Amino acid sequence: MEFKIAVLPGDGIGPEIIDQAKKVIIAVGKKFKHTFIFKYGLVGAIAIDKTGNPLPAETLDLCKSSDAVLFGAIGDPKYDNNPAAKVRPEQGLLAMRKELGLYANVRPVTTFPSLIDKSPLKKEIVQGVDIMMIRELTGGIYFGKPQGRSEDGNTAYDSCVYSRYEIERVVKLACEYAMSRSKKITVVDKANVLATSRLWRETALIIGKEYKEVTMDFMFVDNAAMQLIQNPGRFDVIVTENMFGDILSDEASVLTGSLGLLPSASIGLSTSVFEPIHGSYPQAAGKNIANPLGTILSVAMMFDLAFNLKTEAEIIQSAVEKSIENDFVTEDLNRAHPKSTSDVGDWISNYIQGGPH
Ligand code: IPM
Ligand code: MG
Image (cartoon, rainbow, N blue to C red):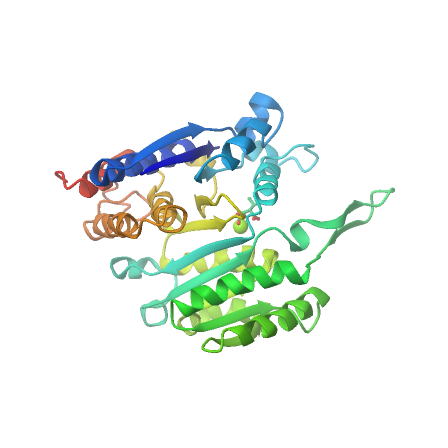
């Protein structure tokens, strides 16, 4: 089969980790006789530098005309320290989410047995954790209007807005995931305070009725933040709104030991986007030290969800597991004897092709 992939490396370590993901895609293509057409687009700080726009129209068109988008990372310290900047790299990411209708961000949080000691939590607490975190991605306080400042500049406001439809589609997706897992779902909200959260609860209850086998429970976000640390094993599928999901998914991601390991898929109305959950890690850019595994695992999600090629997805997943078992990993996972970003990419590609490793 033939697939067109939009490649958006972005900033910082983005280009290096994307190179490894691309190697892996090519290796899978050779093994399974698929053809991949890679087309590159600008996004983030590099796009601002070159075009003045963090998401140029050509990039958006490229994404829309592709079968999937492979995304690196965006962000540059020169913008982080300048709250007055008119254009910011993050605007490119948010515009892409809105324009492609990426309504659900799916982040699986699983533990690798050989890495259990890297977790900040006790082994007994984190062992066997397997959470599917589903975050609504195109609504809520990230996009609500009005947003801005009063004329005198002394007051600022953001609005959290949700429609019933926006809640329905992401809760449905979460219920579908629950059906293929242990049929348990936790809806996280702040219904004791927020009107949007009460609509979330009301809507989720109605959707829940369509999934009779799924047990749905509700939890306030502050309690969820606590339980993720105290008893992460109690969670299976979690579904929540945009801002709560942003915070909780970062919290959940460190349970497994390294942020560098976690993949994500942002499910779109037509094209979906696959990206590691970590950021652009500017201190490591160009040094060939960043962990490419989160990006490579995102490629596995791409094969599964965008191309519906399950065997290929599983092979990538098991190649990553093997590289970890063999301790063939970057410095975040092995300080004493680290491998480089490109060495890890080569090892995994060779493994997939059955070559020497
Ligand atoms: C994420 C990031 C983004 C977000 C930033 C970079 C705008 O933290 O993808 O989780 O807040 O959604
Ligand atoms: Mg975030």
